[in-house]
Length: 150
Image 1 (tube, rainbow, N blue to C red):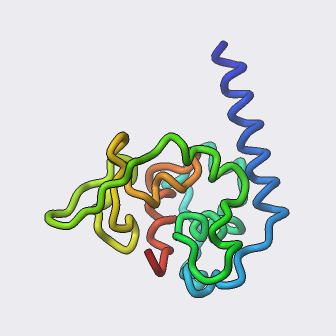
Image 2: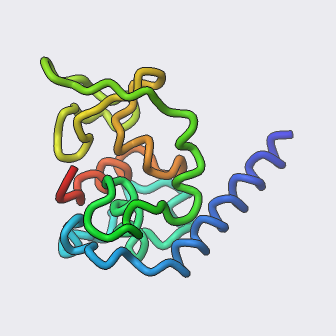
């Protein structure tokens, strides 16, 4: 039933948001995320789903989860549901010659935003495979642009 499916997605988003609210950001968040560049996302770029979670407060944690474990061991642990889909992706192919476009975010790898590997199954960059599934479009690209390191 379509109504049940959207109800379950809304509940899942609520659980993810609760987990991010309770989680403390990684100790080295200033080293891996441009915290000073986090801005309010204009209303013309958002969808209804962004009204259901605290974009301004939690986008830094989401960005930190897309970065490989840098520094402390907590930064490698995904917060909320982000680590749930890890088994769906891989093997990852390193990109060496010409740039490859990610099919989820539309950015090119290798880059600071996408990293240096593409999933052979989905053709998503490694950063997109670590981002929550409810983030997409302009908000996903905004999220990836806040990364400081691969």
